[in-house]
Image (cartoon, rainbow, N blue to C red; front, top):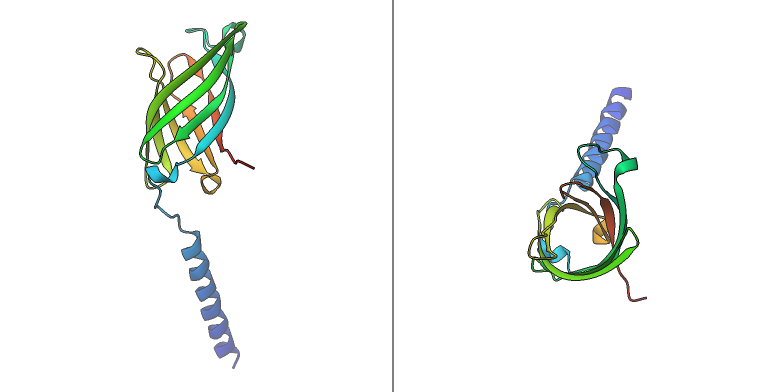
Length: 150
């Protein structure tokens, strides 16, 4: 009788584990349409003084703004940059690509000679995007937060 109860218990435990495992599997159904809203951000960053990359010789800057993802792989952006006592307002366009696993890249067309590329991961059920920019001599990473009208 103990053996039957143990087998039944193990069978039940196995069923529970399989159900939990199925729920824990990662969904790979992200697309460009996943990002179809306005996201705000701010970042404190450094322009590195190469080849000496110590923070004491680097130039700090701050950026605050918004990206409007259009759901089709295009975006518009607007931000304000503060560096060395100067304030610069910028508006720009860009493109992005979301992979099915929720990671992706974006490219901003800020000027004819400046096209920074960012690598991102969508988090918090699409309410936030963790991003890092691969810009030579810059060190910056930040989170985009989905804006809400309320």
